Amino acid sequence: MIAHRSWKQVLPWVTAFAIAMAFLESAVVIYLRKLYYPDDFHFPLAPIDQRIAITELLREVATMIMLLAPGAMITRSRLERFAWFAFCFGVWDIFYYVFLKAILGWPTSILDWDVLFLVPVVWVGPVLAPIIVSIGLTILAFIILRKRSADPVFALARSHGFALGLCSCIMLFTFVEEPCRYLIARGGNSKQFTVSDPAAATLTQLAGYVPVHFSWPVFTFACAIGTAAMIGIARRRK
Image 1 (spheres, rainbow, N blue to C red):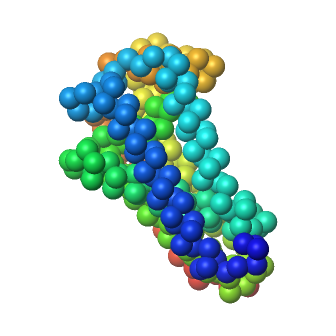
Image 2 (image 1 turned 30 degrees about the vertical axis):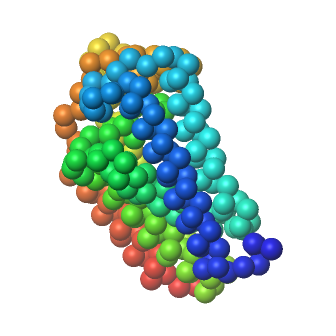
Image 3 (image 1 turned 180 degrees about the horizontal axis):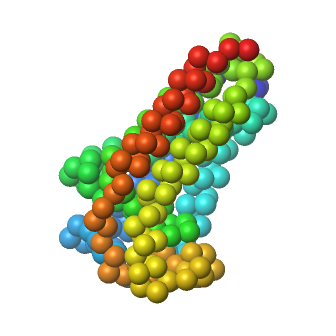
């Protein structure tokens, strides 16, 4: 059974799964861009049919569930499940851009802006930012899996868990800051930050929005916190 195999034995199949998912993700994006951006992808976002917008939101939820599934089937440990999710997410996201580059020739630069997620508002950022996050998640996954392999009762210190959570929150802020500011400037209210009306909340209300500024200093600060946490985890003993 998978549960009795080492993480190194399972790793090739999980990697293949994540890469295959990345291709499916890039294929969907290629179809959408052909439909709504026949010349080339650019901001502001083109108006999208509400049913397609809702489908996109549900597809993103389904993608997260699929990325969680391998870890859930491999182990009962919450920490190891998190590690497998982090690994799958990192590989999936990196190869997503690899396939887009290979098929579309996009991004032309790692500083090109991209739409990263749609819940609760559109996440945007230069392509380099999610790639950095994905590399960090992959490294974190390897650290945890190696630690758990050497010591089955290994656990994160509370300080490390807090640091990783803080790092995630700060990074999230950098991705949604500009879209939120844009909505507020247009007289947005808290109802605009829900998904009760997905098309309106994520696309229609952001018509005309063109990203200009990304908070690299804040993002770098978050990276420093995450890196320090990973170093601490790697050095942590029983």
